[in-house]
Length: 599
Image 1: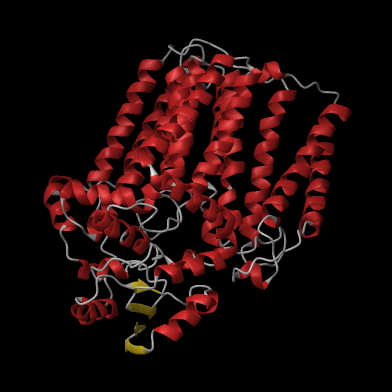
Image 2 (image 1 turned 90 degrees about the vertical axis):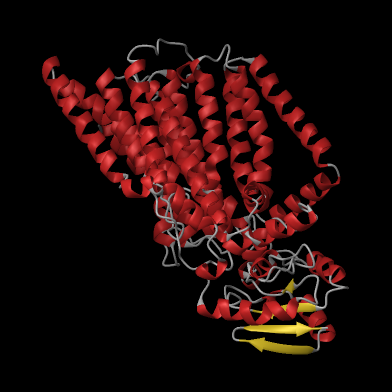
């Protein structure tokens, strides 16, 4: 008890030291001319990642030094080595419950009411205009600048449009809902694999599985306008954990899982670039664990799978592969300068500091808990379960990268899903273990456990809020929704613009945006003249000059719109392009919020 008090004091002091050191980490800004929050405050893009690493690292070092020198605890790698053990016991009951839960998730999906809210002309426009242009010209990175990933922004929507031979906002939103369904399913499967590795009784496993499953699927909902604690864009990351946890079950023969992880490490760059960074950081951690266990064959399989996947995509994409590389490098290099928001200092009065501080402290705590397994022999945790907990803490640590580029409340909130999952696993395993030890009479444990399982299942079922009438009418509702005209999703002003501007655009082959209203090419049924349709993601002088070069044959520009006050306007941010437009496009007109320029 005394040792724990001293440890707590040591960690508190180290956190205070980390907080003090936060602003001391300040790299020289350099010569970047991308106008944004970083430019105004002369803030280098590496400042926040380095501050984050040191904020978590200092308490961890304090914990390690305390454990080694004060407690005289020994570091033992054997405590986190892979182990084979009997997982067939009680397997059928848990597997059957898993199938029932998955079936209920599917039923819930078919009972959903389709969203009819007004279109987000900025965010949803990113998923409409790029695939619309790609349907016309068949191009990928050469046709549209990609900010997140070609699958998420372009190919997914294009595929479903071609499948139904119809282009609509309804189909785009349906695909978004379908992604959420896949993500919920993957979370349930992940919870199932975690539960299989828990060293508790049969009923205890069922209780544990129901609790963490209920918590997991509550981290994301089907409301496309709400801010969730998880994002469907994390699908490949959850898949990689599923495959690795599956590998843990039979690490001598589960080589297919490793090959798929290697493939995911590559294909995720096409899905979402920031998610690919997190997935590959997890992959490096997996390789370290595989090396610790001297499973060299497994490591070679992963490396071969990665090399083969890159080579395959290089051959398949041809000339587009070079553009993919250039696009991805540009995103990684410039995006934080373009739309970055400086991360608030912990325990300060800066906006969103409270939310950020909570996340930083919980991430640090999760890493300390995970590292404790290397020092303490905890009999109630088998080795594979320890490894699972460690990787959940790694996921929490790596996921916070998303909040370091744009540190507003919404992006910080979206990184808390892995943290909640981690602490749910730790807390409820501990509670169930304590409950078992507290009640000595087996028949009493059995009765209470059965009652809890029933109650939890009922709570899970009620939480899904299934509308059976919607299930019966699903086919009719679906067809009506996907063929619903775009005007049903637009505001009064947006419908007025489309109605009055669209006829006059017949003489133009294409249009060029100089507004953040990214949906306009799709809504006006005119492709963007250049690949730079998503103006918000531009900023560098190189990109501005490239846009001007591609604009030589452009005859019509939408110069301003509804979303241009979100951050720095295009006119203030893209000064070189703005000067070119003002010199070349002299004739102007205006429809409500939109200014139009003609050559």
